[in-house]
Length: 213
Image (tube, rainbow, N blue to C red; front, side):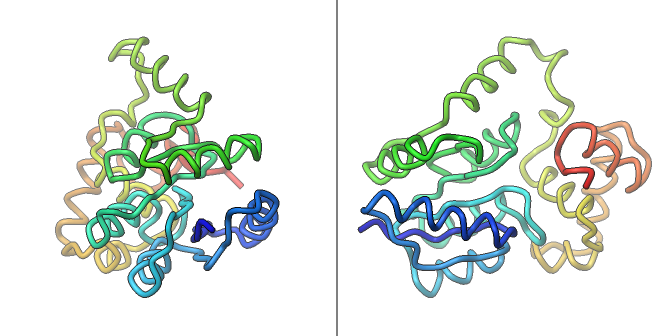
């Protein structure tokens, strides 16, 4: 049996995914986490065979959680399962050490295949994500999303800002000084052409980094 940790901040999605995975016969969900911090702690105490990781969650989120997990368990297999299929999210998750990236809208059979492929030592990117990555690169630099200008750390700080995390929250979650967080914040303002957190949040909504709801 392939032992799986589910990481998503929506309990209903975790419940549904657990039921779907049970249909395959060779998967067992050994734990659930609703945040990146919980995922890191779970893997430290009870390492699974594979982690199914969402990207956009409260706290440190999926990108930083993947990075922390891989730092402590470089053999761990992480697959992102998320609604955020546009670059730079796939690139940054893969850079952080994830072995796969699939969308939440994929068929169950594709999810099963992705897990088995990654467990066999391969990387897996779902067709829709791969297509968007390819099209984004073909479009040329001037047509790429402004988000492509951000580093993985800048993206992580932005996600925490626009989901309501305070400077101290971000400092504690990412083990950065408040001064360094402020430096990242102003760097984001400069790169994305905004002047405050409200404008940054509106930018994130326009570019589908977060849901307006």
